[in-house]
Image (spheres, rainbow, N blue to C red):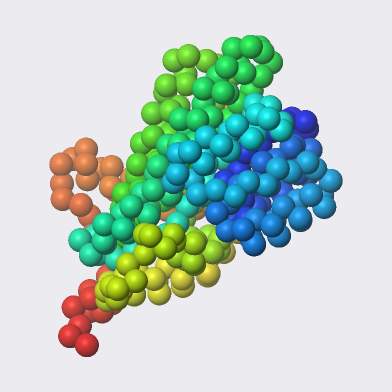
Length: 303
């Protein structure tokens, strides 16, 4: 999609991070934008900024884990702007800790947003986009799903997050194949960012009350994971704006995979070689063993 002017974008997680940066690019390109987010104050500020760029914006407050709310988002989009040309299923949350220490509510929250949120977006918007393509030979549609390098690397002490993002990888690769069976006008893209300053380490602030474990204290592994995540995310050198631009470049060039840190693909290659060769998973810290020793020491400490 090289010409953005007059086209319609639907962006979830639009109040910050990749969603806000994508909204900025879309606005500068002359798109009409549906900006959706779960955090009302962040969405309000983001919408005011994007409207000031001179584009039409429809704000929509929603929790992507709730199917009915995503369906309402689609209905509002059709009513205001018509069928979108770019759907960015981007909303996400972060959580860490040893995989057996995640509570049932942890799984419900993280999978609900990260995996089912994307699934709802695909389920609801793809038929609308396909119908538009069938009706107009010049129509072009793009569905971009945000996963993570975590879905390709399965780093330790990040179990629930890894699972949610691996699901998005599988879903989006399947979507790519499925779309190719029925149309040449609609394309899928997979965004796999690594550590980028987006604020995802603070996503617990928007966790619904009914999915909070207020009577359970965080485990040692969860506290360690939170501290490591904050440090890694806030110290990231690649910006959210750069990643958002790569998304638009991928749509223009019809490239499926969008990576923020291509240098991290060495770990992906090692994992695939483990699988193909039937060998045990390679120690994720084999290149920097001191990091692994530090994490093990913290988890095994009696303090």
